[in-house]
Length: 546
Image (cartoon, rainbow, N blue to C red; front, side, top):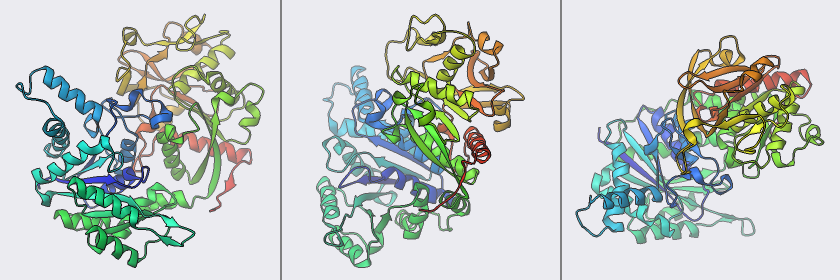
């Protein structure tokens, strides 16, 4: 079957949820038996988001093959239960970098290199490479930004050209827009949608389907008005209302018939009703669990929740498995001190110390680890969170006063965390960390082994520093267990404190591999332990649907 392409643009305003719409459509098409992938086109000039501040861009998502990508790829993987790759995210910076590199190599045979055709051809080639691989029936292409933005024009032009290149019967355009509700007038306003579609007309595109975000139901008269002024059929005006959880969106899109419209317009052989029973059961567990518990997420960027998007989604997955809603208590590590840590963390049933870079807030994280260890509260440290837990253990259990990471104190007498050997000659920042999937051997008899249920695993990494092998024996002598080791380079991947009810830290990022279909076993085990702690200490509460 010829590969089909679905282009998704956004209008009126940003943050309408293009990524969730793409992921939801992908989920519905996969549920119909089709093979689907998604690519995100980002119009910023950074080659990738790996060097961006989390406050600027949210979390950096890492793929199996080590690509540092936009956080929307996390949504794609969680919804579609597929692995994305380097091919799944393209930025303007990457496009221009590749084109300029080719020009320097003489690839264009002396021609004047221009936006059209060279930049647009590079974009098209990246999209077509997925379709021509023979692996997919449908390639969904999300174009970042808002239609009309200067930086997004090459992508929209490439989309316009590609629709003719592959044939109009093989490519459609979905435009996500906003239909605002004015409370004073008590009515929905269609003019922003009309102007957004008009902008597309000016670029040479006619959307085939409109997905309209709204706070209140869109009446049939409003749909007809949008269809009339935007030159689409009434059935092609799809309402996207606010949902109680993002995981409800595929079900809402199914009710609106989005997948049916796409199937019909592309002539796809996906006529069977999508199999969504498991998905519905999962959503029901999220919406109506039996109990509620509270887990503290201690981090440096908690003001911007997207900085920890994959972690919070993995917690949601684990909560569904354990029939409980997890209220995440956001704790700014800068604010934690020895004097206030008990007050700040009072009433939580688990403590998760999050990843990050740099020395700000480190001592607050150390206090959180110490509080969890001394009070037998389930503790989960991820990447920097694991490193901080090792620092705390070295200082307060092993007697290594002023133990630290050389990232924060180059003159520490006990560099219990130090720069990896292969990182010491690295001078460039972008894409040079230990990235992607690496092997890990699990030690028998540990809680980690019980959680995974298998002796060999692979997990995704994003770091430059590691536990110092030269002095790590001191940790073992004082009761810490290395529950996971990279067999290729003898690196510590997982630490565990056997004397504690649940105290685990991972050098890798398990949150990157948690999906709806396969909730991550460590998160499931952590939430289970936190729920048990809450039950024992009378902190568990019946769920109330507010």
